[in-house]
Image 1: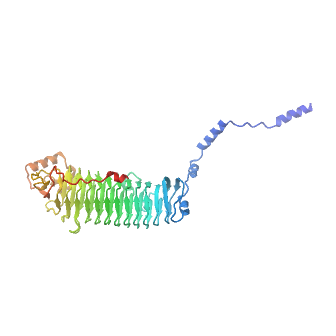
Image 2: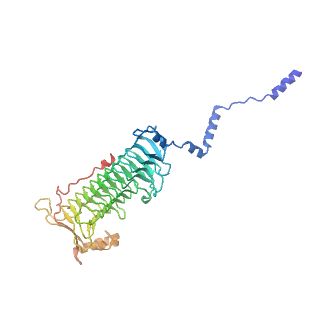
Amino acid sequence: MAAIREQELIVRLRPPLVQRPPARALLVAALLAALLTPLHATRAAAVPPPLQTWIDLTPTGGTLGAPPGVYAGPVVISRPIAIDGKGQITVDGGGKGTVVTLRTSGVTLRGLHLKRSGDSHDSIDSGLLIENGSHNVIENNVIDDVLFGITLQGSNNNHIVGNRIRSRHPDPADRGDGVRLWYSSANRIEDNDIARIRDVTVSNSLHNRFIGNRIVDSRRALNLLLAHRTLIEKNVFTDNATGITTLNSDGVIIRHNQIMHAIGASGAGIALKESGTTLIQGNEIIHCAVGLMSDSPMHAINRITVIDNRIAHNFTGVSFYGEKGGHLVLGNRFEHNLWQALVGESGHVDQNEWRGNYWDDYQGFDRDADHVGDTPYELWAYADRIWIETPMATFFRSSPVLELLDFLERLAPFASPTLILRDRAPRAHGSDAAGSGVRPDPGGAAR
């Protein structure tokens, strides 16, 4: 009897067996734990590794061998190395400063994605800064979500080719420059796709070449200041407030570009200020507030030559101001402009030379079939003098009242009209020789 009671006591004191929960319950618990994990802990675990470590381990003249992935910046490169991301390496600046800084020569950066620079205009936070470097190759990179795109300071003979650049901010005035050259000469900026920036700025920089680029949806496609001997060729500039602006820049060559839809309040396809010895050749300047705007060159010998361009569908085809003249306007096509040209001030003799241009409103004949009109093309201002002499009246331009007044003036002038320009040898209508029709290759910027 005593033995039975002892057995019962042992059973009562024995701890119950622990039953393992089923696998389904474990899975639910794991999911709940993941959902309840603090957000800051998740972010801390996702911090990318620094690219600077890989750069420091790469020997001089060597190629960086980092695997594909996202790496943290900013980084500084001070020795000639090569980095080929092959479109699989992203450098994230973390929203502070410049993402990548080059302080050397002979570096190749290719196939990288640079993003998230700082947001300071004072420190020129950029996707890429080249500082006192030369013979660097920056090729086929994507640079976006940055303030400034590529900045060169005191850097010469670099090749910037095939990059895609985007700034941030919706307002163009708040953006940074897509490409910014400061005291940097003999650089080649070619075949880049640039959009939603403020400007491309070239300041105190000589002998730079801009070829085959596409710049859209920005304030100024190109802004030159003391940028002598710049070549601008085979680019496409469209939907910007202004196409090309040059200030105190002599010897600039602007040829075979497409400049379209620059219809800002003060927009122009090309605007020259105190920039002599400039060649403007073979461009298409279409649908701008003013196709070409220019003052007189400082010296008579530094003439501005405008040759073989198509200037069409603009509010004003060309606007030359200044009494010195100094423009040679030869062999261009003026088509469907609301007003073909404005020259100087009312009452002053035109000192520019116009010859061999095609004017779509020319009313003369070509009886000897030499492709030249028998009579000069003359542009007179009738009621147009109202808004020419009173700029505020431009608001009413093309209004029914002004059009009626202009018709009555031409029908029965009650004041002497003003001669704006005279082309003594205009191209006749229907002439195959009426301009060469040279046009840029739109696909050149997309290569």
